[in-house]
Length: 342
Ligand SMILES: Nc1nc2c(ncn2[C@@H]2O[C@H](COP(=O)(O)OP(=O)(O)O)[C@@H](O)[C@H]2O)c(=O)[nH]1
Ligand SMILES: [Mg+2]
Image (tube, rainbow, N blue to C red; front, side, top):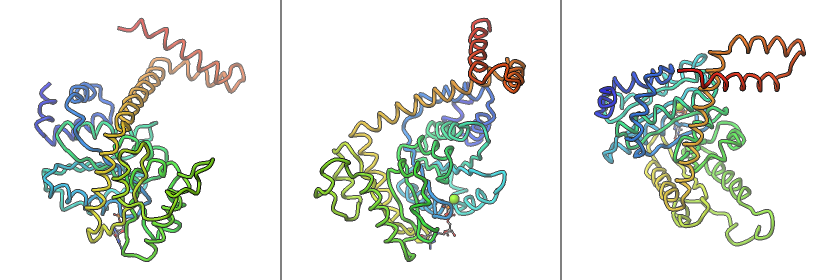
């Protein structure tokens, strides 16, 4: 396919078309994506997530500049969880990253929630795959840390940075539990504002509680409070557990950017040396297969047995059957039909 070589050669229009088609589930798009897969695996994918207004887009803009100065090509995926209602969010992100718009070493792509199950994380994986194949070495995925879909998106990243900032209400409470578990690195942005140190202390406390063993050892020396800084994180590289470092930044003044990158780098080394990177890669591949499997089986059931599904709905309401038996019967029908198709 010459579409494949065009994309591998860095053709931005061909790449954008493929991303659109993958989003629309055009079957040929998957042939192209499939041909691109052997050319992937080189990019580092970093998720940047957290509350709206924490400064994620400003930070992403700084990270892009940082990586560009190091001569790296950078892809940005901006996920907007609610675009049908707030079209302005992506526009704002776009404006904040405007200065990179004419840099062909930077590719910025916005993704909107489409409503289909797991669709956002799937689209995100497809887009990062294309960027990876095109030779973008750093891929930054910005997503608001709310909702299951957005948490799924961060699972596609090698390293997830959770960004918070003082003045957003109860910062720590505002971070969803799920996203907290996904955090590899914490960033307390807007360190120029009052309350930044308190936010750091809250995070440290929370991490200490999360690490505290249930039996014994709870008051051992390592429990001593203190900044979980990058140096400590680097020290812990050979340990089996990773303690998420907390980095303060002032994104609006480009302060702390290099340190944040150093923390992300340290996590990358830990992933490689601990074997966790490999485990996560296996988990991602497995989840992708399962997502694809669900999608094709469900769309096949709907496409080929829509009438039976409708009849089942009627029958369930009439109490002539129940959801369990109805679903089992549909599975049997789909599987029986599977062999007879060309
Ligand atoms: N005081 C201060 N404001 C910041 C900082 N970083 C970002 N902002 C401002 O915070 C607002 C939200 O930033 P934005 O990057 O859009 O946040 P996002 O919603 O997380 O993407 C914007 O007005 C930024 O200019 C910072 O470090 N300090
Ligand atoms: Mg933003």
